[in-house]
Figure 1 (cartoon, one colour):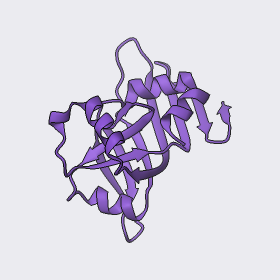
Figure 2 (tube, rainbow, N blue to C red):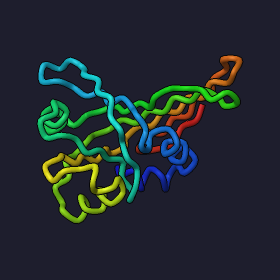
Figure 3 (spheres, rainbow, N blue to C red):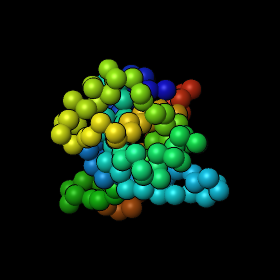
Amino acid sequence: MSWKEFEEQAPEMASLGIERLNRKVAYLAILKKDGSPQLHPVRPFIGNGMVFMFTEPSSPKVRDLRRDGRYALHCSVDRKEDEPLIEFLISGTAKIISDSVVRAEAEDIIAPSVVTNDYALFEFQVDYVLAIEYDHDGKRIVHRWHREKINKK
């Protein structure tokens, strides 16, 4: 499902996801051809109802995501002095976007000068979201969302 659909179903979690992932360094886990996991630092963008990234066409991410689009995307974790520590993760399937209109919209979101014409554009479809908040005493609050339903613990 698209980020837009997730956002409509779980607006508070989506706001947290935008805060934690949009234009920030995150960690993308994907599967290599031999089935082993591979982790890549990336900078995802959220806009126009999508979570997406542009990447160099020669990147191993392109080959691996085209072959098996399953992914997990986890935010960088840091704590501001007066705020809880927050982890945010989404997972699902990445798909290559070749539609020129969608590509132009994505380029406008991130600033066209950052991307060259040969960069690959991937959209991250959202099947599962996990947000964990840790207060300063170590107590945690876990929020989960699945494509079919919203669960909170």
